[in-house]
Structure formats: C-alpha cells, structure tokens
Amino acid sequence: MSKKMNKKKLTSLELLNKKQYKTHFISDLKDMIYKSADKFPKKAAFKLKNQDGRIYIITYEQLKKDVENLGTHFIHMGLKDSAIAIIGKNSYEWSIAYMAASCVGTVVPIDKELHENDMINFINIAECKAIIGDDKYVRLLKRKDSEIANKELLWINMDLPDGKPDHQEEMNSLKEFVSRGALSVEKGDTPFKSLEINPDDTRILLFTSGTTGSEKCVCLSHKNICANMMSMAKIVRVKRFDHVLSILPMHHTYECTVGFLLILYKGGCISYCEGLKHISKNISEFKPSIVICVPLLLENVYKKITKNIMSSLPQKYKKKLKPEEESKNLLRGLPFPVKSIAIKKIKKSLGGRIRLFITGAAGISANLIESFYHLKMKVYQGYGLTECAPLLTGNSDFFVKYDSVGLSVPDVEVKINDPDDEGVGEIIAKGPNIMKGYFKNEEETNHVLKNGWFHTGDLGRMDKNGFLYITGRIKNVIITKNGKNIYPEEIEFHLNKSPFISESLIVGKNIKGNEDTSINAQIFPDIEAIREYLKNTIPTKEEIYSTVKAIVTDVNKKLPNYKRIKSFIIREEEFEKTTSKKIKRFGNNMITNN
Image (cartoon, rainbow, N blue to C red):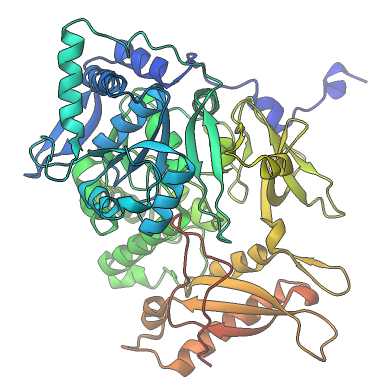
C-alpha cells in the first residue's frame, strides 16, 4: 500500500491549527493600548461626529494619551483597585472610561436599558465606588442615591456640555478628569504609566442578561479578554484599513471584545451608530468594511436589499426572481451583466466597502448566510458566552460552513459532554478565556466549572471535522412522556426560515387526558411580507392565519411525528425580549388570533 494511501486525512480543526495568522502577544489591555499606539501612532482609531454633524478622527496616539490621563486622575481620586460602573450609549467617552477603569480598578459595564432599580442592585452587589454615565442615567440614579449602599460614591458625567463639574448636582465631568490628568502627566506625575497589572486578577464584572431573571455576575480578567482577542486574530484578519460601525451595546462582551477591543488590537478604526433608526444613514456616512451584528439585523438588511432589487429591476427580470421563496441566491436566473450591476448597487447602498458581517447571539439561516456570499459579502457565524470572554467557536477566513457556528477558536478546546445516540450533549469548553467564576457565588461557580471545564448549559453536536451545531438549551428541552427529547430551538429555526414569520416560540403542553406532550407554537408574523406577497393593502385575519398554517404544515412535513406542531397561536405583538434581543422564554403573554 502506498504512503499516500496510508497518510491520515486531517480534520478541518486540525488543519486550522496549521493555518493560523501570526499575532503579537499582549499581556493586558494597557499593554494593548500602548503597543497599538506605538505601531499606529497617527492612524485613526476612531472616526466620530461632533454636535454639528462634522466628522473628525481620534488617532491611536491621542487614544493612548486620553486613557493615560483619565487613568492618572482616577488614581488621584482614590479609585485604584475600586469597582467603577459605566452606564451609557456607545461612545468614545465610554471606550476610554472602560479601558482606564479596567486598568486602574475593576470596570462594571451596566446595561442602560435596565430599570434603575436593577442598576442600583448591580452597583450595590459590585460595591462600586464610582459611577460614570451619560447625563440621563447619572441624574436618574442620583435621584435615588438613598438606595445606593456607598454614601461616598463618586459621580462622573460623561457628557456635561462644557466639560466642567456640576457643583449644584455634586457631579464631576469625565472631560475635566481627562484634562486634570493631562496636567499631572505634564508635571511628570505618571502613576498610570508605571501601573503594573496582574493579568489573572478580576478586572471586569459583567452581569449576564439571562432569560429567566436569574442574572449572575461574571468575573473576567485581562488575560481572559486578551487571550480571546489573540485567538480571534489568528483566524479572522482585521486589516489596518478596516472600519467598524459599532451598533450593538458595548456593555455586552460580544460587542466589547469583537467590535471594540479586537479592532484596536489590530489597528482598525471604529465609528458609533447613532441608533437603530440611523443605521442606513451612518453606514452611508462612515462606509464601514466590517459590521458586528445579530441575526435579526442581518435579516432586516437582507429584506431591504430584496425590496430595493425588486423595485429597481425592469419588469421582465422581476418575473425571474422569487424572493418569497427560501432562496440561497436572490439574483439567480439573471443575466451576468444585470447581476453584476445589481451587486454593485447593493454594495453601494451599504456604503460601498462592506466585506464582512460577524454575527452571533442567536441562530441564523444557512441560506441567509449563503445569500450574502452570492452578493460578494462574507458572513461569519460564531458561538460564545459572557463567561468565555466571549468566543468559543467561529467560522473564519480559513473554514466556513453556513449551517454551523464553526470550529473551536485557537487555544480553546470545545467538546460534547455525554452525547446521546444522536451525538447531542452539553457543550463544555476549556481555555485561557474561561471566566474566573461568578462574583460572590461559589455554589453557581462550582456548578458550571468542573475539573477545568466550563459547562455552558447549551446543547449541541459536532461533525467529524469538528464543526459545532447548537441544538438548544438544557433548561429549554421538552421531554415527552416516552422519554423523547425535543429541542424547541430546532423547530423555531425551521419556522423562522419563512420570510412571513418574524419570530416564533415553541412550548410543550401536557393536556389533561392526552397521553403525550403536545407541541404548541406561538408565532409573530411579518405582516408587511404577507401583504406584499398577497398584494393586499391590509391582509385579513383569515389570510394571515391561512398563510401561517401553510408554513406550519410545511415545517411539520420535515419533522418526525413526536416533534410536530399540534397547535399554534398568532401574536399581534412581538415577544418580550432581554436587552440582548433574545426572546424571554418565560413571562411572554400569549395573544390568540385564530
């Protein structure tokens, strides 16, 4: 037998370990800021808009100075080794506050969409010594300061108009802190520059949003974050000319690590979206090349693309397109010259430079990903959790599988624990990015960290090449009376493939007198898509019901009998969601419409 025949064929995961990009080592975030400033001093780190709408830049050299100056004054104000909360919209001020606070003490990013009672609860749990926030949130919390445990709390406003302290409200200005720090540095007082950071110490406290109301506080170190950044940089090339439009909230570790810190590590540029209503305008203004997003945003982008193409093509070509069908290639069937012009128009409508979408946080249709590839734009789907800083697996420049969340990232080991006959089991992971534990919660920490492995609580399976497929959450599994496991996310995935369904939720019901569990679907339809398909001004309830019923029937044909949807409810309002845009599986009110 020849040597060639004897040679073992390497899996995709094994090949990935041989094909990685070279990266430079960083020990902590301060190290990252200084090294990036040395490598790209005059390059734009941020491209921003002032109050007059004019665009200006912040160089890497200026970024380093601002962080150093702010960190210096934090130390002078007695914040060394203290917990510092940040609450506000995505902004340059948020960014430098995060970096300075995480180096000087422990940064506590808090979701600005939370109720003020929850914000105060988190501030008290973390024992914060300072609150940095947008004017709106600082003043909101200041009115309830009697409920905050620390009576000597330092209040720092990120957007006081003149940058001066507000003595009437006893508030400091972040801009004034930067200015005062600069004066100290000019005089040779450089406590931040000489600051030594232990990469293994807890420096970031993140409260998970959760879907059951059981939020936990995740302890991350600089090592966790930096290790994850370096892992990602080995498989996805962020180029120096790359420009990211930051859309997702930065208090989430997904946006913070991937759309903020990783970009600065690699010398890219960041701009901030002014709000969901302004995405199209901001894309046109800033012309990003990379967008970090969630599937819902990507789906909306594709719907707009479809609508624009259908309205701009000559009538004779429209007949060849069937956007109401699940299609991998919207432009299939068009002559090459027409297709080429259409692709150019699509890219121009998205600023002209977008080359890559990175998506996570929820499942996405493989056909949607492939559709973007046909439009000459890549989509990389990944999987991670706050506890993992966040990325565990991802598609990359080297390997892409449309229906998978990818291969485990370099230096991280992912495996399926105790798989069943179908290969499905709990996803567990080990690596330098795994959290130190839950803050002051040893019981929960021991529940998920066992023998060096983090137990995610997510269910999945792996193919022979190491590609991971998510099947659901352990807590969400519906177990029938005869022991069959039903993963609601699987059925929801099939339903949500339809352009006529915006969202769905699968629940199991044990009806009295029935021998087995009945599968029920709650469905929020896309009325606009149904209207366009039926060519009606306003579809009737009967027409909506008939359309949804046809989709349910089609989905049932693809499922074994025990997984089939036995009844469904049509909602008139979208589902209640967490701040990370995940449907709350408990607490959603059902609205019958049939």
